[in-house]
Amino acid sequence: MPFSINPGSLVLAAPGGPFTITAYADRIDRRADGGLAIIDYKTGSVPKTAEIEAGIAVQLPLEGAIARDGAFPGIAGIPASLEYWKLGGGDPAGEVCPVGGDDPAALIDRVLAATRDLIARFDDPTTPYEPVPYPQWAPRFSDYAQL
Image (cartoon, rainbow, N blue to C red):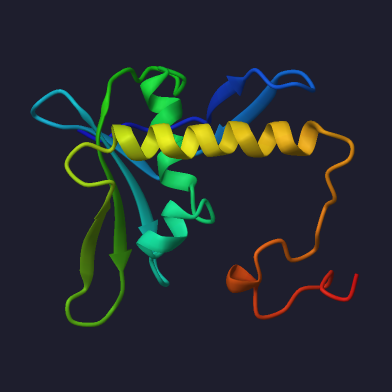
């Protein structure tokens, strides 16, 4: 059964004070086993596993953390799956791309820990804000690359 989603948020303790992560989930279903399926629709490319593991594409795991914390209004439960649904007009018209395996809890925990580390690093006033911190994940064009 799909839910109509309002934004959810998760407040993390951080050295510089509370840090709030807010997200809108495209869709959250309650599975027959009681777990939650958190779904993100994609009409373009789906993030690669390496991008998720490297902390570049963390939307679904962070939405999983918000759901696990009961912080989407009216929704409580354990994320049992994190899925990208690739939608297109070709053949096949759609494809389900799960991430995090059968139990996404480990991926959610890793991404949440890395997010906490990143927040703490940027709460340190000596941390530089580099325009392209990870060259291998640099966008094709950036207004800030010349800085």
